[in-house]
Amino acid sequence: QATGVWAHKDWHEILEHLPHKRPEQRAELTIRYRIPGPAIEAYTRAAEQGDLGAILRLSYFYGTLVRRSDMVADGVQAAKWTQLAIESQHPSALNNLGVLIANGWNMPRDDAKATELFKRAAEAGVLDAQVSYAIMAAEGRGMAKNPAESAKWFEVAAERGAPLAQIALAWAYSGGLGIPRDDAKALQWLIRASGKGCVIEASLLGFGVGMAIESRMPM
Image (tube, rainbow, N blue to C red; front, side):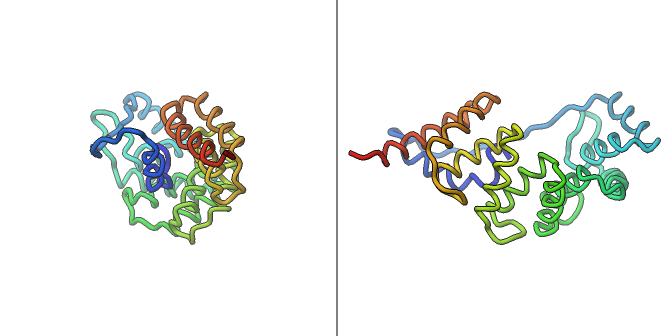
C-alpha cells in the first residue's frame, strides 16, 4: 500500500505545486518476498504441533501471496491455517483474516467485515491493524468516512513507530483532516518518518507541506 490506499487521490494536489510537469505515466509494480523452503517446513512442523506463532505465519504466508519460487498461493492451506488461527482468537489472527478479506485473497472481498476485524485487532494492540483500520476509516471502506477516527488511529500507530502512519499523520495535520491543522506537527512527523527510511514519500509530502505553509504565511 506504499503511502496507503487513502493517499492516491491526494498526490495530485502536491503535483500541482511542481514548476515543471511531465506527461503522466503508469506502470504496474509487483513485489514478492522469497521465503526459504526450510523456513516454511520448520513453520509447518511447529504449527502441526500447535505453535500459535507458526500457525499465524503460515496463515499469512499462504494467504497473502508471499511465496518462494516453488510455492504458490494455496487457498486450501490458507483456509486451514487461518481457521486454526481464528479459533485461537489471537488478535494477530484477526488482523491476518482482515488482510485476506480486504483484498479478496482466497475468499470473497468484504470491506465491512475486514474493517470490523481490523478494529478488533487494533483495539487489542496489533500495530498493522491500527494502520489498516485508520486507512479504512479515511477511505470509507466498510464504514462511513471518518477523518477523526482515522487521524486518531494513525496517531496511535505513528507514536508506536509505524512509518506509514507517520506519513499519513503528517498529511492529516497539514490539511486539517480529522484534527486541527498544525504545520509544526506535520513537519515533526515528516522528519520522524524520513528517519525510518520513508525518504521519498517524506520529501514529496514535505514539498507539498512546505508550499502550503508558505502560502499561509502573512505577507
